[in-house]
Image (cartoon, protein in one colour):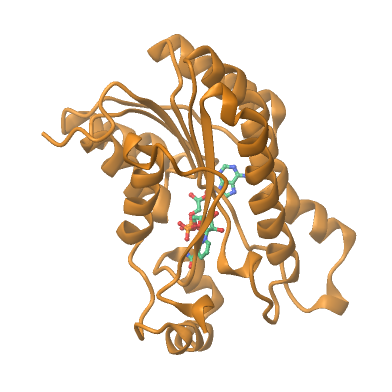
Length: 249
Ligand SMILES: NC(=O)c1ccc[n+]([C@@H]2O[C@H](COP(=O)([O-])OP(=O)(O)OC[C@H]3O[C@@H](n4cnc5c(N)ncnc54)[C@H](O)[C@@H]3O)[C@@H](O)[C@H]2O)c1
């Protein structure tokens, strides 16, 4: 039995689909007790499936933009497992972005709710629990869109840049209290999110990659596993592109 996260309790947001779904299974197989959360109720079925495999996971629905639900997620974690060691801020969405001149302030608020505001609320409520456990690891998910510009992802890019900065400021504030905080910046990953962008965008993304392809969800989940584990014990405050080299050139 692999054990890179044994004795750790982890929350994964956005665990019902895509990268979060893959990470939920990976973290649990690596010995973590995992709280799966999402706005998509399909996460409950995934939790049942993983429990049937003998993995120690529970399901707690949570919209990361709703402070009451975020507080309930932390409370449910502590009441189920008694501690919190890892927060994986994976949930996010590009939905509602588009041509700059057509975007509205409602679009800005909707997209920010599902991205930067959600990560802010999760960090705000998880940090006291992490401190009570003697420290821990936060892994946030930005995007290469938070590092470089590109067409039609204006609000998403701004939000992902905010997530990088917020996670770095958490690292700066709580490093001496044993909390490490790092951000992953994925390039194109083959999930529903990328499928929504359409074939043209996928082809363009693959062309930009030095490896000539997009990532599989497991390649991002493995990075999150490393940053969440004690193997990354001296890594904090970084934002790591996992993008097949898109941002290298
Ligand atoms: N797929 C990519 O190419 C790519 C690239 C860069 C960054 N990312 C980031 O990786 C993360 C995972 O993306 P994915 O590709 O697996 O997407 P996905 O759409 O397959 O899964 C995202 C999950 O997040 C959940 N979610 C969205 N808003 C939420 C909210 N407010 N509260 C709780 N859950 C919410 C969705 O229900 C979904 O289950 C996201 O933060 C995304 O921005 C993805």
